[in-house]
Length: 124
Image (cartoon, rainbow, N blue to C red; front, side):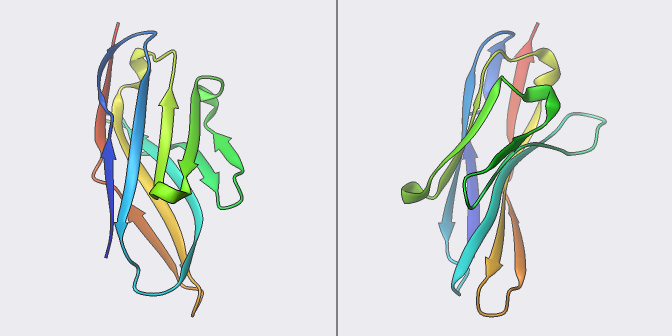
């Protein structure tokens, strides 16, 4: 019932910037709270890794490799989470996935939603 749609990926030269967006639509069918929203990435031949996360309270956390370069933010009115990526490096090349971790309030069950991914390619 919940769909996450990512946008903003593309090809950029090293040192450039991209802004990823992940907009949620649909409904869980029940009251819920968002525990966290985050961005993960997966490069070819590597495991998916956490890039950045923002909690329901607004607390953020970043992978060491992106600290100082990436910023995660959200717009609750638009049901959207963003990832501003600056000073991009070739090693940032990956498919980026947004993720929402949602708790259903009626039974405290957890649901994990993923976007389909958006390709980010950083050239040297």
